[in-house]
Length: 124
Image 1 (tube, rainbow, N blue to C red):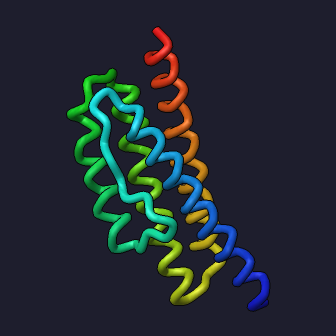
Image 2 (image 1 turned 120 degrees about the vertical axis):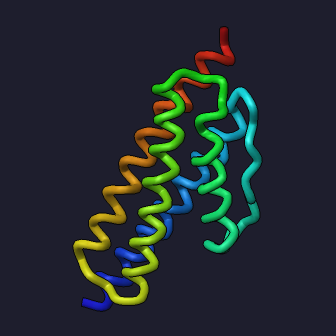
């Protein structure tokens, strides 16, 4: 069972990293770009406040309500995934791991939708 748990945690950590990278790219394309830490390994104590800052600034971006909601949604689901991952790393529970994965799916979907809109806006 420990192998399964380790593999799951490794996959979730990779997913968190991947979604954070999408957030970094999206933030760089925003009408008012937001810079995020981009070192090779970003500790949670640096990433979490940065993600929270983006969530707080989402409403200040000159975009439509849908796009603001996509940015905010991506941030809050990524934060929830990080929290659930930390809980799983301390005490693994399958439903927590599944919740972490689900939050990553929602975060990625919202941020990719926003990225498409931003690319279209830049092309116009």
